[in-house]
Amino acid sequence: MLLGALQFPEIGELVDWKHFGPPGFDKTVLIVLLSCLFTLLIFVIGGRKKALVPTGMQNIAESAVDFVADQIILQTIGEDGMVFLPYLTTLFLFIFFCNIFEIIPVFQFPATARMAVPLFLAVITWLMYLFMGMKRSGPLHFFKVATVPPGVPKALLPLVAFIEMLQLIIVRPFSLAVRLFANMLAGHLLLATFALLADALILHDGVKIGGFPAWSPLAIAPFAMDIAITAFEVLVAVLQAFIFTILTGVYLGAAMHPEH
Amino acid sequence: MTLPIAATDVVIGSKEVLKGLGAIGAGIGYGAAAIGPGIGIGIVVGNAITAMARQPEAAGMVRTTMFLGIAFTEALALIGFVVFILLKFSS
Image (cartoon, rainbow over all chains, first blue to last red; front, side, top):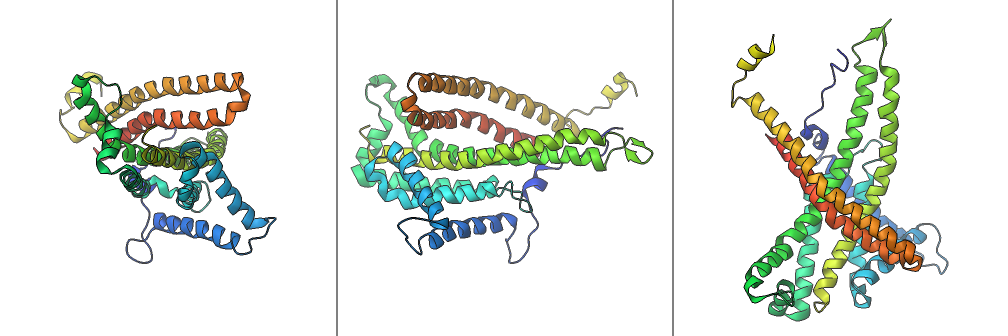
């Protein structure tokens, strides 16, 4: 039977990795640590010389900072959001490195496809915007402005306030985490599926003509698709890092300027 | 084995049947969850392109807002995807 040997693995096999080294240590942890290291290195090496005309690593560091400042902070928070520049730049680069490991050979896995990583980042953002909002306008005023939209009829107010409260406390961090997680997991599954198809057509083909697997020329199709998806995943990795950071900016902006 | 005989072999509530039903539900559920966001993202991007064509000097701002809109709309489809994974692989 054609493709008799094609067995799609359980989801656990695609995201779980062999433990090695210290207890609890596996490939996901290694990728997270490497992402931290790369983010750190960019700024340590880039900030060492502080030349007027930047070259090499300093160029990368400065364009990353400029990008976050111009495209994210000024667009969503405004001038007084510049205090968040270090946090948002780090967040952007860290998520980007975690994502880009999806297409780096040997690793081939985005650390953000494990729910723990995006969830923890979302919790940091959540604590941050709640804290900033309460610090700016006092806890009572903050929750009042956030949950009571102007111009709502009195009868509808309890329902609207409940929904807005739910949105502020649960939906925002949850959707922030799930968006990043599901995007990266979906990309990983797509890559794995087409790689598996090509593998099954070449190596596990049941129909043989003179010892040569008869359907193996067809493997060029899933292989080409894998290359196309790899290129697409580069775009997704940058875009998801950008979206996570800009949504953090939007939430912080809403907490800092409750009147808007 | 003919079909009627095969049908009598099915034990309602057995592990295989539950797994199959779970897979059917997961497939239909994800498909249904993708309809709305698909239409929504189409509207968001279409209107963003209209805005960029009318006012090319505002393209940067429109693009940022477009990505925001896509992110919010897409979240529903992604929650559908997560439900699919949960139904398919945890049952």
